[in-house]
Image 1 (tube, rainbow, N blue to C red):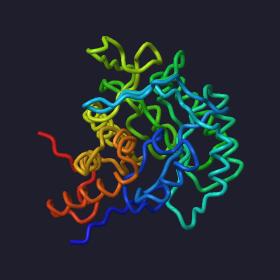
Image 2 (image 1 turned 90 degrees about the vertical axis):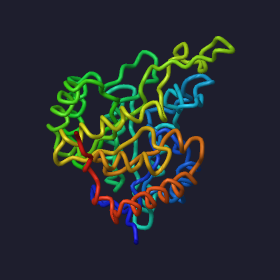
Image 3 (image 1 turned 45 degrees about the horizontal axis):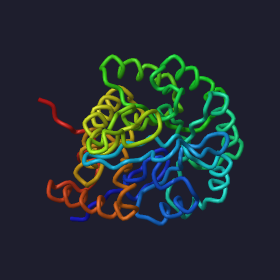
Image 4 (image 1 turned 180 degrees about the horizontal axis):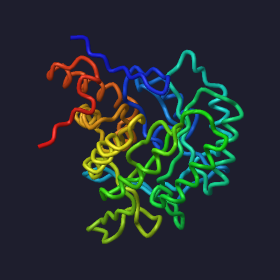
Length: 312
C-alpha cells in the first residue's frame, strides 16, 4: 500500500505532517538549513525577540528518563536575523517556513509583526503566547483578556493568516474561555498545542540538588511527561475551534505518538525533546513508523483517521 503523509493547509503543501517545535534546531541559520534539508514537512524558527538574547544561565536543559526539563529563556539572534533569513528563503522550491514571534511586550510583538507585514513574505507567523521560562514575565495565554487585546491589536493591521502557540490548559472551563477568544479572529487560522508544561521541578537525589540553574530549578517539562496533556489540549481545541486547525506538540518520540496526535485531530505534528536528543534523523524514523502503523491499520492517508478518536 502506498502511504501518503502529505498535508495541505493554510494554502501550503507539506510532504509530511512532521516538523520541529520552535526552540529546537532553529536558532541559527545553520540549524534552519539543517531543518530545510531534512525530511520534515516544514520548519519553524526560534521564537524571536526585538533584540538578541543570550537566554538564561547554564545549565538550563536536562534530560530525564521521562523527557526533559528546560529553562532556556528565549535565546535568539533578534527578529532581524530571522527576517533576513525569511527574505532570502526560496519558497517556490522549499518546504513551508513558519516564523515564531515572542516579544517581551505587546509593543515589541507589534513592531516585529509589522516588519514582516511590510515585506509581504509567504512565511506564516506564529505568535508565542506561552513561554514559561522568563523570570518575571507571565504567560500571555493564561491572561485571556490580555491575549484578546493583543490579538485585536495585531489584527488591526495584519491581514494574513497566522497562528498562536498555546500553553497547556488543564480545566474544561479554560478550554471554553480560550476558544471563545480565539474564535473572534478569522485570520487566526491555527493554534499549536502545547508549549512545555511550565514550572516543573526535577531533583537529583544523589546531589540533593535541582538540575537546572534558572528560577531556582523550575523549568518547562517536555517529552513523555506531557503527552497526555498535549493530546487533551489538541482534542479539546479541535472540538472548539471550527474552521481553525490545531498543530499537535508534546511527547512525540515515535510514529505511535504522532498517530495519537493526528487521531485526536491534529493537522500537523511538531517534535521537540526527541529532535533535541536525536537530531534531524528523527523525522525519517518517525515518518516510517507512522507509515508502518497506518499500513497495519489499513489507512492510506492521514485524513482516513484524523480526528476520529473514539470515546466510551
